[in-house]
Image 1 (cartoon, rainbow, N blue to C red):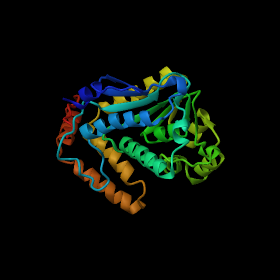
Image 2 (image 1 turned 90 degrees about the vertical axis):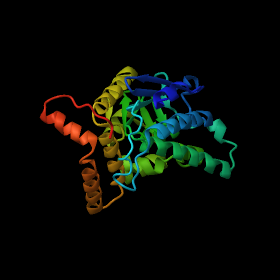
Image 3 (image 1 turned 180 degrees about the vertical axis):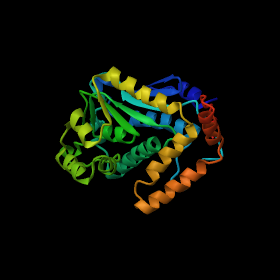
Image 4 (image 1 turned 45 degrees about the vertical axis):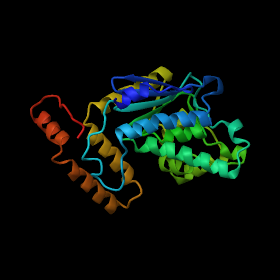
Amino acid sequence: MTVAQALVALELDTLELEIDEAILTVTVNRPAVLNALSPAVIDELRRVFGALRDGLGVSSDDSAADNAEAAPDWSVRGIVLTGAGEKAFVAGADISAMRDMTPAESREYSERTQELTSWIETLQVPVVAAVNGFALGGGCELAMACDYIFASENASFGQPEVALGLIPGFGGTVRLTQYVGIAAARELIITGRRIDSAEALRLGLALRVLPDVAAVRAAARESLGLAAAQSPAAVASAKQTTRAVRPLSTDDGLAFEAEAFAARFGTPDMLEGTAAFLEKRRAEFLGL
């Protein structure tokens, strides 16, 4: 059974899955509560991305060639993560579910959700957040775990946890800093201020802003379709390398890149890609 077939077989209450030409769309489907990130949603997202992780593998930062020996199942080549309706991507965590948690329970909740976002970030295939409406708190953190964010004009982003006497707990203090820089991240987190799609674009949080939900999802699928036409092994290596070099010095980053670059030489996809280019034909990649 392929990973795509395994996903279709999942019984889910809070998510909808659709696979079209190896592009998987994962929709958080709780529009009545603005797709709030409840424990049930988190559990189902963990089931979906856990299955993807098992089937596709993850990008390891330990070695540029860790995943070069075995071809993963490439029945899913890209993922769109979005929310149902036009009002919200994910409006935030489910506050009613959090209110009575003990510190120990909240730590486990944080760690389980952080693990989910790490699974999203380290998948072998690209994941695009198609943000429609509110992406607040946990919703913003979920979007930032993706490779990049496309947003509708009515989208808004924020980390408003301080208004609840809390701070971000699903990766917000880490990833928002990586997206927009330390000063802008601190200002957004300590004020709890919401920003619209135009400001998110200016700060570098959103990569593209499009008129409406349909345009956002179409653009996300189009972007992933372009990626799906490339060597899946090279795409995975590119994801791995850009993530691995992020905390490194320039010299160490260049050294890692050189190792990752060299690791692709002599692989079936490299030989096929270069041959296809020279022969002026479409490459038929094996994912190796």
